[in-house]
Length: 140
Image (cartoon, rainbow, N blue to C red; front, side, top):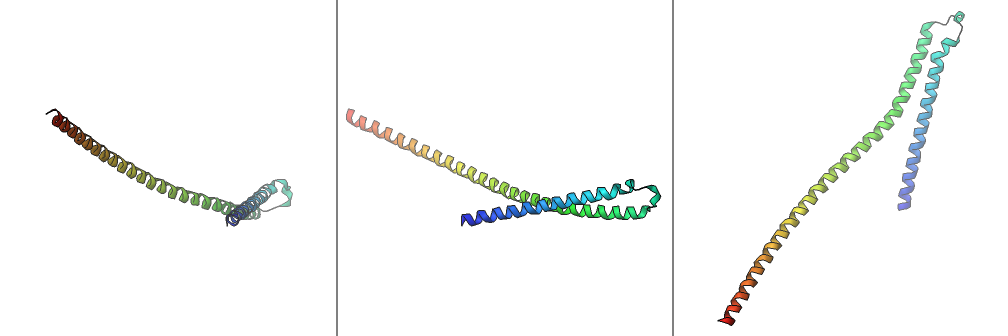
């Protein structure tokens, strides 16, 4: 059963890594395309008569594409961070509850220890009194 669980975890981790690599590759390709399109008008001769709105429309579409890619990659990272924060908060709550439990246990131990000391003192005092009474009977 442990082998199956660890294999599932490993396959899940592998799938996450593969999807992250695919997303990163996609973002890099989008950035390359954006840069190529963004500076392409600088390489063209001015005599071609490329209109400015066409370049702007292409650039805007590329920017939107890159933005959506970045949002998808960031969305995965953000969801992982939110999951981690949730786990850390639950761990903090658990540690807080355990700290309170330990304090209660220590308090109970201290009370029990004081009660044992009082009982021991009372027994010791009673035994001392019995010894004195026995000595008085012998001597008297």
